[in-house]
Length: 364
Image 1 (cartoon, rainbow, N blue to C red):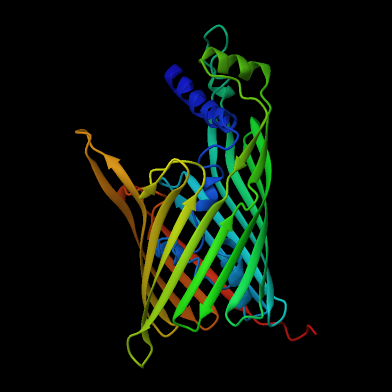
Image 2 (image 1 turned 180 degrees about the horizontal axis):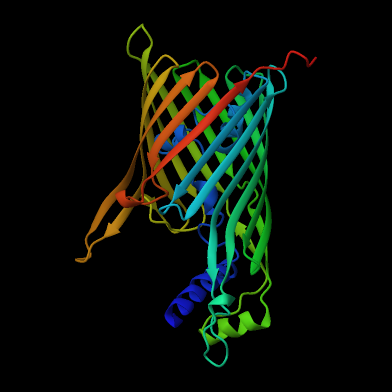
């Protein structure tokens, strides 16, 4: 039990302390890179060039300009690590006029009911299980989006203002604010190009830690440093995308593919292309569909070099598959995907819904 206590405190204190170890730590706010929508996850998140409708508020707000209905609604729930971590998404998009649209996205990624064993053992070494409580470690993001078609045919721009709230029980919390900018250029129905600049001016997260005296004593007794209030920056990330559609038959059978390049600026990462300044992570999505009714998807992402015991390296990647069905204004999408690891044991089933709603007849 004592080893469990030490392990738990070490994990929690490391998570908290890592936020202050660097003003711009690598993988800051990384929960926003998981992705939303089973359609996109089945394509390996390679959708920045083709995304349209309500989910575009997350992937590329420029795609919101393609909303053709009064209101679009997007919903998704997924669970990772055998249900330990839960990921929820709600999206809304509203067409303002023929050229512009607005959107709202809410995301929650959390681990609930984490045992708090900081008070399990008192100073005399006595164990009292009644002192075990639970807490939640959760990340929240709220995106307010706007998109508009420009005077050039096929060109649209969009942007996000996002509010981020992160909380670790009563131990720590932070509030952050940031901006995203996106662009899409469609050359007819065959070719599409997109660009997304996340955290344009860097996203600022201000952390506040509140530890009582007893918890501080446990931290120090287990060899952990006490976290301090501080500012965390999320550096800009650029995503470039190219999309191509192919008509296989005249009856409506078609195929498409998209290649995205994620260019991060927070130093060297374990990606396919990496330097001391930037890292480039490619991912690709392929789909085959019949008209707008049924679509089969596959994606390839998370290319990483894995070192073996003999110091040799292998290049691994994460495969993803998906299926989409459209019944009039109701879209049901499924994906079999991972959270960022090539291990089959950690794969999850993800289902998402999209609804297109007409303007109520009683509204002018």
